[in-house]
Length: 457
Image 1 (cartoon, helix red, strand yellow):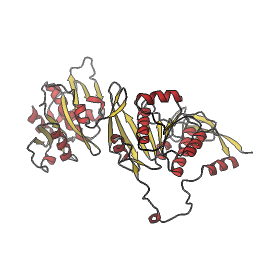
Image 2: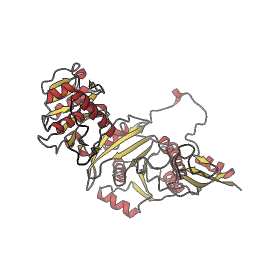
Image 3: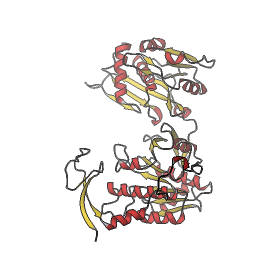
Image 4: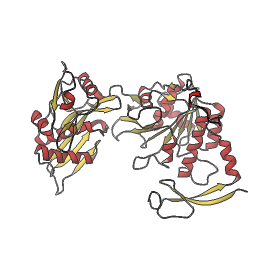
């Protein structure tokens, strides 16, 4: 008879200890100990053998002898999704998709499954949170009805593996990884041990049977995927679906990709019939920009190989209470505090004692250094009550000494701004010296904060 041993596991980091603990010795978290039973001996060995390895080849072979011709990418037909994946889906890959509740994770998974079916492939969609009728209602709303789209309402990982092995789909969707469970583990579904073991078995299935698999994962209140960190290490690609509440725009971003770049993003718009691709997000983000408003600046940012124009808004006012307020949406508040200090030191504007509000319109998030100069000039515009030219775009990094530093891909950013009709582009002098003169736009090169302020104000 197999021996059963009681262990305690941290729900944050997965650390296991033989005795109960109040504070985890690895991550330092309090009250995260979870009791579970660990089966040892012959039963565990038999189950490990039943799962099998990733390949039938058990002997080491030269890397030059491995045939990779059949490892081609298969495109969904959703260009924004294919872009983020690096050009399409790699056969046998394991993808993890996370995002806030109601952001559209299940919707994009169902739409991608339907697009895959329409190319003559078979898809198995496993729902652990909805019944078959509920899934069909959602599929009917977005037009995902096809005989080759197979639905399965199941949470037992062994049953899911059994059905997937029988029907041999080209694409498998599991919604969600936190809802499935392994019957031989005593802990509840969603626990660290359950998520880790379920994901490991699905990974073995995907690699052994060459079934491309998409796992939908829940996130915590901090925005991280719920469960052990090993889950993100286990999969090939980690995607995050982002978006601000109240905005219809959604951004798909890769934070890990073994088969492509992690710098690409995909932009979607949520509508009644599902998610719609946004081919030109720059014009969409600038569609409702106010005319002649102080504190409004157009920034040219770069997400992977895609240049985007977004509106940065700033409001500087007198504090209503003793302590000034700092509210930032879409930008790093620490970066804004740094730019305020540089603006006061190098630009001579006394705004430290004022209320400061910074917002990126459209629910977009700026996290690159090229957004420094647009944010700073938006603050200066609001403080002085003077609007910048309506057809001006700005990008550049600001240093602590007040210098304007050059950024990467300046020509690509400039071309995007010209394409949308901007006639003036303020850029770092370092970049301007390397660019050719343009007939459609005037390039304003600046080398420090004082020069930028004197040019505009």
